[in-house]
Length: 331
Image 1 (tube, rainbow, N blue to C red):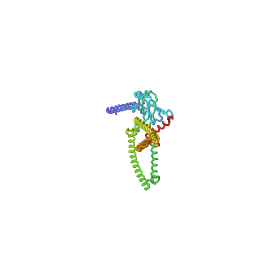
Image 2 (image 1 turned 60 degrees about the vertical axis):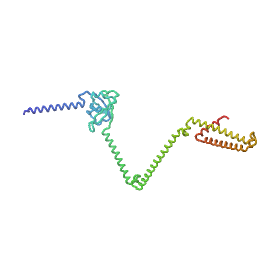
Image 3 (image 1 turned 90 degrees about the vertical axis):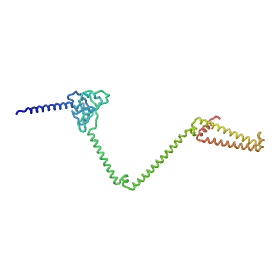
Image 4 (image 1 turned 30 degrees about the horizontal axis):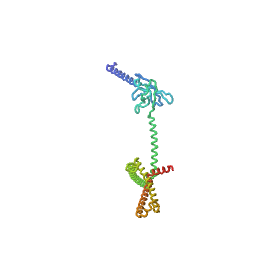
């Protein structure tokens, strides 16, 4: 039975469409495997390829740059991965770039990711070996999760054991939770502790105020109207030093004068000296005795004031210095 024209057209159309699909498939696969473009070879050594196979993609900075050409075992701990990289991308890869094995998504195929270097070194050449970086794999994550689950199970068992002991009243915490008397005592202790803390806060506040007042007083000592301020003024200190020296000399001279007057009076009373005739005048004698008495009192008061200055905290060092100078003077 001869085929109709319509059937022949359908058959020809099917062949053409199938051929186009086949050519597109071959071109797509070839482009993925870099079969139609110029490629350069780049190598990397891994300790574990994690299921990587020839034909898997190679990416540079997230861009498809080539595919895995060959995988071979060098020794029991080293595996060589040979990659074909598109020449247009190859020239951008530096010698300090690093390769790592990852997955295309969560459950996708394994891929080789090339991480760009810092750019300080020159570009790689065909057949060069680049460094590798080990990343966490799904197996590593599962092992970590397994250890975490084991630790969580141990912690749960320990917490269960502790809670059972607490419910049974064992241990300090169990006694506190199950013994009403101990709980009341603890509440009382906490109340006393709060009161102590409140008292300490109040005391601390008072102490702070006292310290502030002391600081204010100490800062006020430097003012010129205070004694410390006066002593810190060098000109005023020199004046006070001169006054004290003059008082000291005056006291010595007054003591000598009083001694001479006493000797003269004794001579007059004993009938000696040129002024013996004055002793017969009772009014003059009384006035003279009164004058001597006043002079003695003034001398005594002056000596008392000088002695007080010697023991004063501000002038004590100066008088000690004068005594040392008198002691060191040659006789």
